[in-house]
Every structure is written in C-alpha cells, then in structure tokens.
Amino acid sequence: MSQLFDITLIALLIACAVAVIRTKDLLAAAIIFSAYSLVMCLIWQHRGAPDVAMTEAAVGAGVTTVLFIVTIARTVRRER
Image 1 (cartoon, rainbow, N blue to C red):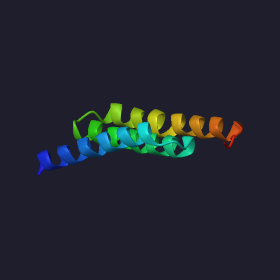
Image 2 (spheres, helix red, strand yellow):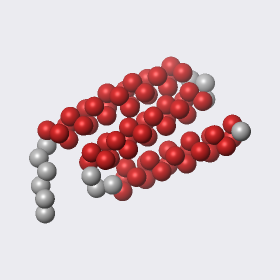
Image 3 (cartoon, helix red, strand yellow):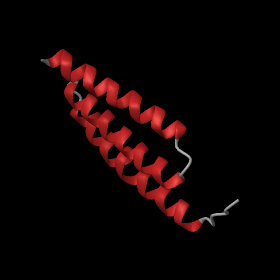
C-alpha cells in the first residue's frame, strides 16, 4: 500500500512539473507550482521529515505562491 502511495505522489509530482513547463499562462503556472509544492510537502511528510514538510508548505506553497501572484498582478499583459 505504501509503495502505491509513493508511486502516485511521484506521478503527481512529475505531472505538475510538466504542466508548469508547458503552460503559457503565468497565473496558471504559479498555481500549478503551488500544487507541486504541496505534493512535495506530502512526500516529505510520508518520508518522516515533518519539519521539512512544514517548511515546504509554508515557504514553497505559501509565501512563494503569494509572491508570484502579486508579481503577476503588478505586470501588464500584452496581447498579440
């Protein structure tokens, strides 16, 4: 059961990484990156490192995502 959970998390992590690379919309990329950080948080927790998991959740999924969204909101979109 644990091995299935590991495989699922790794597959989700790879899917998020590929989605961030392939998406053209910056806001969507920031949100997908947040999901990537949350999956990493789950992996660290499952591996027995709760301190690293909480740091990843706070910094990776929390602060970084907020900074990305604020930065994107302050830029101007140009349509072709």
